[in-house]
Amino acid sequence: MHLDALWRQHMLAGTQIVAEFRKGEISTSDFVPTRPFESAHGSPERADSTRNGILVVEYGHGFWRNGGWVLKGGLLRRAGEGASEFQLYGKAVIREFSYFPFPFHRATPHETGYEFFLLHRRDGVPGAKVVREWTFPPQAVVTRNVGGGVIVEDV
Image 1 (cartoon, one colour):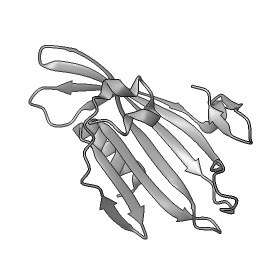
Image 2 (tube, rainbow, N blue to C red):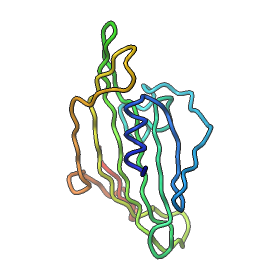
Image 3 (cartoon, rainbow, N blue to C red):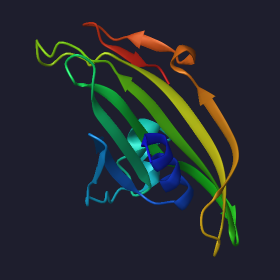
Image 4 (tube, rainbow, N blue to C red):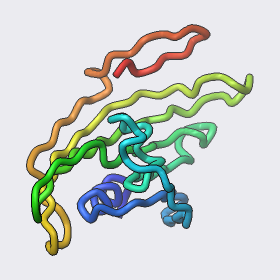
């Protein structure tokens, strides 16, 4: 199992996880956030630190071994009635490029894409069904320079 498969597994199960892949091994954190999903205000980058958040990372790529992938997100919205609920999940797919680590305190070179999933979840039925998916590759994401060479996604 790799990053995307682990992320998707927890999304469909509706479970929270913080995991890191390192040298083919998976390590997970026992820390469980207490913030509700609403505190992310619809942002996939903030949703990973909620009770319904999912964070899966893998570093160790590139010449300096500090490049890698970060998949972060979780539940953004939900609406339902009775025993049925629709949920919107969002995932930021962040590729962090390997870079010379000095000077300290500078922005990590990266590119970010986004994926959104509309799920249908029923009480008493394990897992959710993906109703629709939307993918926005890094080239489709608007960015802006906030100064000092720092580029941020403008979403």
